[in-house]
Image: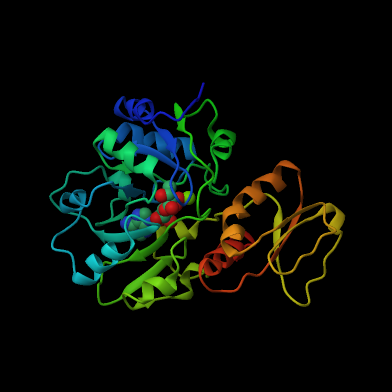
Length: 317
Ligand code: TXA
Ligand code: MG
């Protein structure tokens, strides 16, 4: 039986005892284990069906943890990013502290590590209660859309994980933005996400390759080569010559184009609302066995850029 609780100390107890649990963050729910518990970390990969060459993000609650996790000193551009955006939906790829005895299954044996400090009080309190950073991928089965509420976690992991720390629907609904900081003269966007790239570009120069949109090229972030964010239904991003076939059997999610005569419709109020509801809509369509989802192409700015990236991936590139 998977326990659903709102008690931080109860959830922390499971982690301390070597179990894996799901917890809310401001982006999506994560499936967490203590960074020193190799057995629990292994169980994350098993529970998700996650390939072992896809490394995990460390979640910290205290900047002091960076001192022992990553090579010091950090370049001033990196500390500027941290000051501007942590806690928040930004993951940094940093050089791993060579003296740290960390299980290589966390980072697929790379010499780098992904770190973020979530802007979510329950997540921060949980990490503090455990007194250890947590590794946490999104709390979905590999290949399924990330969970934006605790019921999605339950769909994928009921009776498989010990506990779900229950929170609200997640604030952004999309995963964190990932930046490769290994060369501070050339910051690279590895995954578009909840933090707008326009905000990041006010602080540093950011290289935005098409790689995250292009499955063919060598992926910089191992996870990007896997088919992600995909419902069972086929996704079509609508443009002016899209032929809508059989709308009564299909679904539509959109923003300014208020199309209505579909079997299932979600009309967002703004782009954040679009982001927040996208993965939940995908899951709901699958439950209703809908075969085709039409989606309005969002403006490629702000969180719209990340929505578009997810839609392109879900539509098969
Ligand atoms: O918002 C988020 O980031 C959520 C919440 C739970 O924090 N987590 C999340 O984790 O999305 P996950 O495992 O679903 O995605 C992590 C991504 C993967 O694409 C992985 O390949 C990449 O981060 N990654 C992790 N470590 C890396 C490293 N050292 N170098 C390059 N990419 C890395
Ligand atoms: Mg994921």
